[in-house]
Length: 272
Image 1 (tube, rainbow, N blue to C red):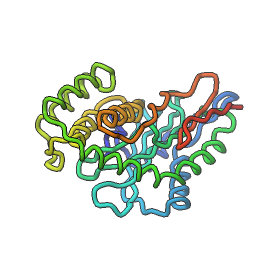
Image 2 (image 1 turned 60 degrees about the horizontal axis):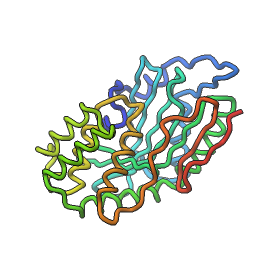
Image 3 (image 1 turned 120 degrees about the vertical axis):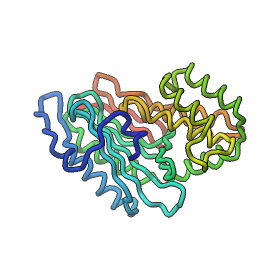
């Protein structure tokens, strides 16, 4: 299970996800059915990427009022695959959103950067049509983003990091709020004694995966933003790192604005 995205939510089946009752539509709230959002992602993946889905994971939180889903695609690389995460809620606590990242198979960790493709939209009148158009455009560029992530991983692997330096970075990340105390405790433990021999080398990639083990703890609604912040921090510590955009805003503004983050940055649109 890719618990870094699901966090503290309960892992469930697709049938259990679709069994959650859809709230009634109001003048100001237009809920999108979980099953419809998942079906559209499948259709978009087939149309834009034509890559096989090798695993899917679903999680429900808040008694079914929040959905977190993850599909991992086979890109032909032995170490990692392309992952697409979906979040949605029936209680207005989360705007509908999609993120593109990479999944490391050996440890089931995910990589999300600050410029990961994301779509977040308030559930207002035209949310479904807007969501479909934005997701289609973003997923079409997913392979390019995945390639950038692989370049980031290569840079992390090539940057040495001794034990003491790693401890220093983890302390700074906790102090700056990139890791909670619980997440930092897990990261410190995994950096001291890696649970996977693939990350035993003292480099920034080994530290990165200790951090992602820690990020599996915590509220799933904040997971992607926390991970994007950690990714940006780690790259900034590597010499000649590829420039990374700042982490996406945590939510759209309450007045109905929405944003989509892609290769050209954040683009704002007004809800109707």
